[in-house]
Every structure is written in C-alpha cells, then in structure tokens.
Image (cartoon, rainbow, N blue to C red; front, top):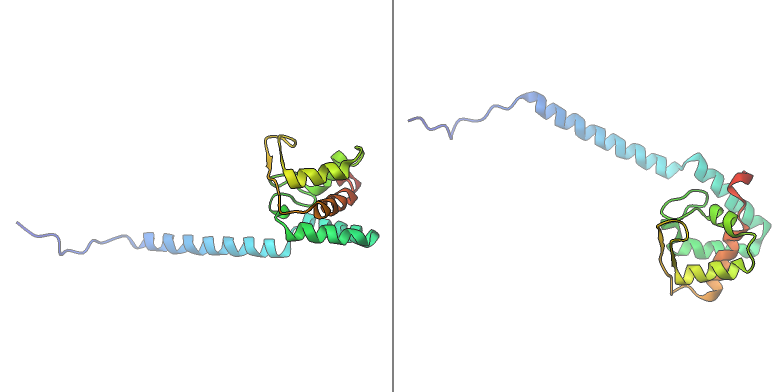
Length: 149
C-alpha cells in the first residue's frame, strides 16, 4: 500500500485570488463607510445648521444642547431622523402645542416610557437632574418642525 499522507494537496490558485479580492473589497467598503460617516450626510449638515440657528436665537438653550450631547441621547435619537427613537424635531412637532409640555418631556427623560412612539422603550435616566432634563426638553421644543425646512 502506498502512503498518501506525504503528498501535498494541490489547491486551485483561483481560490487564493478570490479570497484576496474579497478582502480588498471589504477594506474598500469599510473605508467608504468611514469617509461617509466622517463627512456626514447632507441631512446631518442641515440638522447641524438648524441646531446652530436655534442656539443663536436663544443662547440659554445652549446648555440644554450641551446636556444632550453629554448624555446618551444621540445613541437613539437623531436631530431630524429617527434611529431607535424619534428624531428630536419629530418630538418637538408632536408635543409643541400641548400644555405643560416641557415638564412632561423632562419627566419622560428622567423616568422613561414604553409605547409612546410605537413598540420602543425609552430608558429612564435617573442620573439626569430636574434642571438638566428641563433644559434638554426646552432645547428639543425650540427645534423647528421637520416640515418647516
């Protein structure tokens, strides 16, 4: 009997090329994604302009925006787009005309909620003070309606 354990297996060379080309495409895709995230989309740039306009109109709202930036709000909310939760502009549009809305939103920030915007959980934020949550709510309510753009 012959021993075939010492005979090297010949693999087609095209498999290696497919793997190399696949890896190059993955790297290029990740670079493309990184550049797009770094530059931002036109929507993000428009939202940044809106945020700046609101801050210029009412300088006291700058602290509310700073508290939002310093917390985890932007993980779930965009300024003008829905991510996990609604965009801040959509929140402002829905609640702007309701009575005592700033206190209501401040309470929702601290205590959280479920089911207000569909089957989405808004986690509670007990580390946020009453003053901070009211400042955040004031900034959100100062944003223009998404239709106003």
